[in-house]
Length: 274
Image (tube, rainbow, N blue to C red; front, side, top):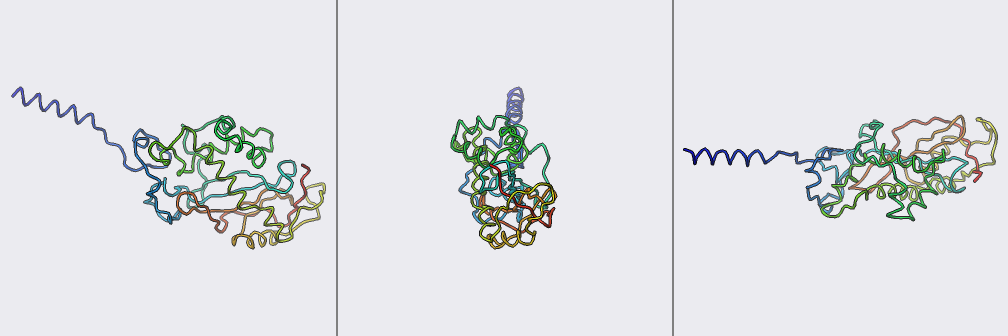
């Protein structure tokens, strides 16, 4: 009898040592199990389209699969022949914004400049050129964009890099690098220029007379990439042009029709003073 009780007690101890853990990574969950999983990126289907399925691993297709690339035209900042970046913003598949605090507080890094400089100084130089803050504090701007938006790109979760392939904070550089690549591929200045839309001489006030129409802007972008943008203005002064994307596979972005609203009809697109 004592032998039976001893054996039964040993089985209870062993059973208690085995803890159930969920088998599927959900969004920003970062339990120990998610780190232990040996995810293999090459097992992801390459033709999955974001927002079409709910049963796909969020490492293989972004869970927040409708994204906005917002590029700014600020006459005080950036090269004279280039729009600068405001951000790449994942939204829900129904077009709703995600929480303002981001999707993963454990990766809310504040030292973005130093993280990137340590791993890729050339990337930092490119960020300073094409992703400047219009308030003069680039690190704060990048920190805000990373925490609020970058942490919501589920395919950049550390687990998604695969077993023994992840270096700490690697996803930070990968996020900013991917956004810069999109800016270069979807070069708004070149697309507008190809349709004869070029910056005009500076004019004072919020309602300058030398303007383009919203129809002209949309037609130029449609001629370049087959979709229309959303255009944002302050008064008539151009502020931002936004392109919307879905994702094929893990990270192949392709433009789709806009989900947002325009805020101007006449557009003052003036030369930069830089």
